[in-house]
Amino acid sequence: MESGLTPGSALALFTAMAVLAAMPSTSVLAVSARAAGAGFRHGALTAAGVVLGDLIFVLFAICGLAMLVDALGAAFVLVKYAGGVYLLWLGLRIWRARRQRAEPESGIGGESSLSSFMTGLLITLGDQKAVLFYLGFLPAFLDLSALTVADAAGIVAITVVAVGGVKLVYAWAAARAGQVFGHVLGEAMNRLSAVILLAAGLWVIVRA
Image (cartoon, rainbow, N blue to C red):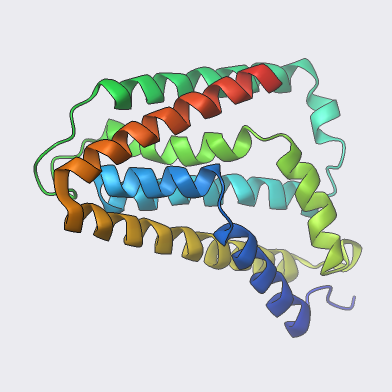
């Protein structure tokens, strides 16, 4: 079977994904806020959550699960409610927490790291239209019916590098800004991060 992922389509797909990932969005704000408020590692973990959410949707599209949302029915709504409540809890937790004055990369517990990762994942999964976006986006660059296992692996790698790379740049820049401007900016970004999470949680619940 002829491959559905040619070098030209792979380059076009990578470029398009990188450009879309760089556009201002809730995920960009979340990654930046976590990095500036708690250090690069937290921004990177939030970015990893975003990438995993995108990978889930990409794999759904590759597998041809166009009717995923309808098939899950009420169960999908319950998942969205649970995700929205968790985002609200994270937002309140960050809002009430005092920013550590130690080095951004030190003294950070596993629970906090998991929270950063789940923030990125749930913000991405909270948008049920994302799977429909990928179902319409990927066919513009390649023939999904002609994809091989190797092609699917290539698309996964492109997604990780394009989306993850861009988000990491945002995390690095925001973390550097937090180091330069110090505690005041860190506190402000923590507040912004909390507001973003609260707004995202409410949005997920209202749109469920």
